[in-house]
Length: 224
Image (cartoon, rainbow, N blue to C red; front, side, top):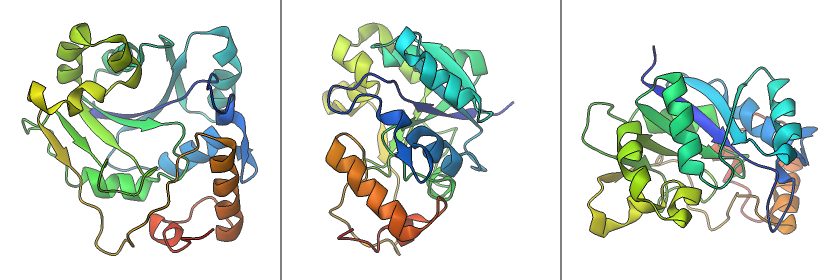
């Protein structure tokens, strides 16, 4: 049994761009575009999808299920609880967290990060935040750390899952993944939070011409 699994999460509810997970990107729903890019990871274990148990997420769960990706459902706002439940069902001790608003993550860059991960270390979480381009985001955290932290989390921390781990005064051991030196430094963000963000990623996919471009190719298009 693998010690790690990759969990992609999304829900239909979004205050700024409702239903964004099912918006078209490259001829398929955005969430399917993301899953297709990440599913060939060699180091990330099983790739699964986690959404909420709310009725309005039925359509999202059903669509992802047609791709062959295993779907788990849990709490709507308490994302920490949702991830903890998935980890326990899978029997893994580490989780890769990917959010459904980052369609340009891919298996190659994830595996590059995981080559820097040490499952036996005392690190609570590895992260790309603050050093990778925004939207090429991976957080890899210990399930034991999450289980211990969860009862102490505020509602905001539960919704945002890893927010508590970045509170330096609490003493969590957080280590940054280092990006490839060949990547160009970018000011662009590749998350989809608004209609404008969505239009930008659609334009980039049209220029790049397929679903399986690398991050290095993506970073060449500063102004697209």
